[in-house]
Length: 265
Ligand code: URA
Image (tube, rainbow, N blue to C red; front, side, top):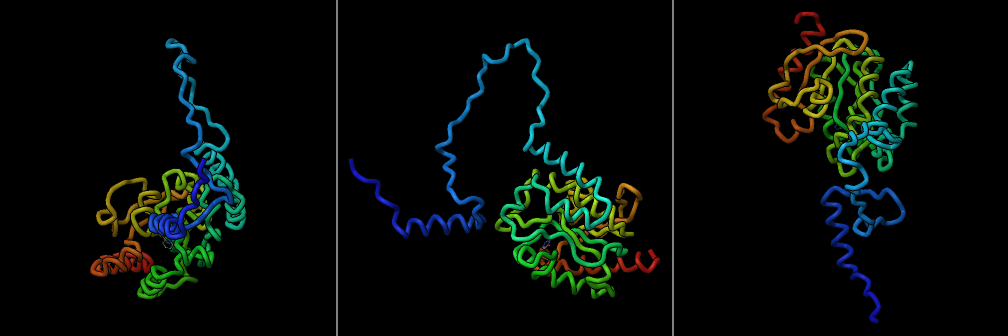
């Protein structure tokens, strides 16, 4: 019998490069897991009689439903933003925490009149543990400065507080397990104006799937759980970096926010 030949270094390099290009840039366990070798369990059609009603879906520990339920229970009972942060840090229902370097909870001043919510931290945010500190954050700073605001006069958070590996979009499951936390964070910070940055945050918080270019710039209401506040979607700074011509739309939206803050709209 011939001995198996180890793969050539160039072949290994090619596989790793391919993973990196696909956004797989982190390992989550020491040992490789060969999912092709795992036994596939086929459902046994004889196990349930045709007449028997289907059992209700079980909410077993570790399922997405259970993670969401736990998140809701934990978030609801957090009395302060500090307690909410601690609860999130201890929450094990979202696997993004396994690959992230830091929990990215918030920046700015809780209780500010304006709260901005983005999608999820990127690489720089993950390293520093603060939202919007990379290139798009620098643009956000300039956008705020244009209407006389800065990081200390607003409160900033994300729908998902851990960086998805390779900056991929968070899965619906990941977003769902973080949902109760961002909703409670908004409730506890209690802003007068909520700004959703980009389509992902807007879809999540306004519960709509309409395109961001149609949603942006329009005032609507958001129910924090204790009161109704004004809320607006704006284009995400990362999008504006790619589509600088759309900065004029963002400018209009910033003017609308300023007018609302000044009490003239
Ligand atoms: N994009 C986001 O949506 N959030 C951040 O914190 C950084 C970039």
